[in-house]
Structure formats: C-alpha cells, structure tokens
Length: 167
Image (cartoon, rainbow, N blue to C red; front, side):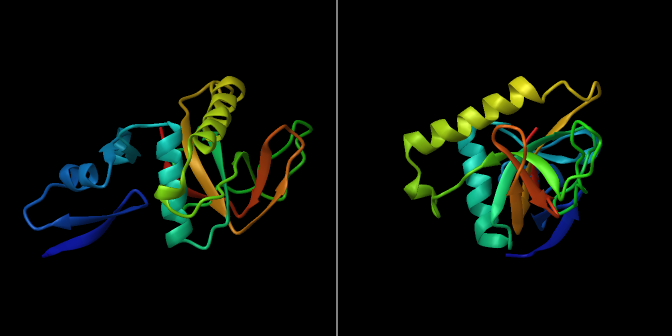
C-alpha cells in the first residue's frame, strides 16, 4: 500500500495515496480537534481507555498508566513535567488517576475490569475536571516507573508522557 507516515501534533498517522489527513485520522479512530490536534472520536469511556492502554503496552516501554486533566494542549509522546502537591512542593513525576491494567489483549477484558476503569473515569470527572478554570484536555499518561501519591487512587508517574489525548 502506497502512502506516507506523518506525525500530526504528536500522533503518528499513515496517509494512503489519495487520502486526506482527516480520512487517515478517522481510520485510526481519531477526529480532528482544535488546531488540528487528533482526539479519540468516542472520547472518554472505559473501553477506549482500555484499548489505548493495551496498544501502549504493545508499542511503548510504559508500564504504568493514569488519566490526567491538563490545561495544556500536548501531543502524543510529549512529557508533562513534574506536578506539584497542594503545598506547592514538586512531586517526583506527573500526577494522574491510576489505571491498573492487568490484561494483555482485548479478548481478556471482563466486565469487572471495565467497571474498575469506569470508576477511575468518574473520579477524574468528579474531582479534577473544571479545576484549572481554563479549557481542559484529558490525557492517558504513561511512564516506566511510578509511586503512589497522597490522594486516593493517585499515581505519580515518573517522566509521564502523553499516550493519547482522550478528550
């Protein structure tokens, strides 16, 4: 198949000959967001999060994952930098709501695992969405090392980077 690989705001996309960028993004499950940023079409739901973690486990060195709300518009592979706690002390990585993924393929997912991820999405929406007072983006964050944070279900992901923008 003829075409070219392009990186569009941090997301690698194969564009077939004669295909538009929007068509290529759509084939990969993305829509074009503000400023041409690729975002998942179906947004933030448990099955999408699980699918993206499974893809990341197969294609990156990341072993730890979480969800993060951030006012910055970042592309796939960009690093967040270290977060700060409520006392303005720098943490050892990027703060995120922990997504504990035990399965390795889409066929291994059961309803309990989907329910667990849904609980983390609900927690993110209840406690973090709307806190920045600005436009917000929701990301799946990944990293090779982590530690638990002080908040319930908080994971501090060392060198946390964008796996995909979910919303």
